[in-house]
Image (cartoon, protein in one colour):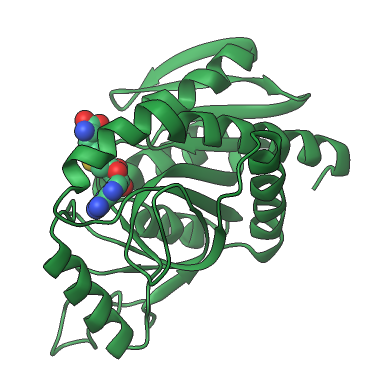
Length: 245
Ligand code: SAH
């Protein structure tokens, strides 16, 4: 009954690896999977890799080969909702694929054969992640705003203000106003939906998906996002260990 902790970035995983008890590494599908214990809980750690297909492969392997029965995903994202600033955190309620378009066969954004545009996160696990996020940021002495809402995913690093605005506008007009944009979450949500695996996700805002996104992103990852993820996940695993969620 392992809980899978999926990290988008190696910098985020590093702190977890240092805390992992009885670590065992297995290579599979060209990826490294780390099994062990955190706060007395069996866990398996993996890097999602970048983009929807790569992330879907990682999650499928976590479930099929490593017995993951719950999954929590951390990473960074571009803030595109009003008031979603660099340094804020978004805990996802659900995900939409902003590059899915099988129209006119299916409505824009609908995932063919699923009859839905969005995949929702597990309410209980997301509430626990939201609590851990607030507690983790408090422990770091940070006043960052924590948002809770929709995240859009697609195979594109959005790095132009005009594009970010347009993306927010068309998604909002279709009834899917997103807080943030990234490249993996919707794929992970879809695979977890297929297997009936409870899933929660948080993203630290590394950039505003605008013309300086490519400069802001790497700087932020190294300096801030890894500390956020570690503090939040440490709280999350400790609470999980205590409540046996
Ligand atoms: N230089 C990085 C590449 C990261 S791609 C490397 O070599 O590892 C950007 C990653 O951050 C993706 O995983 C995506 O999910 C997230 N992300 C952050 N800001 C984003 C933005 N503005 N648009 C899309 N994805 C973004």
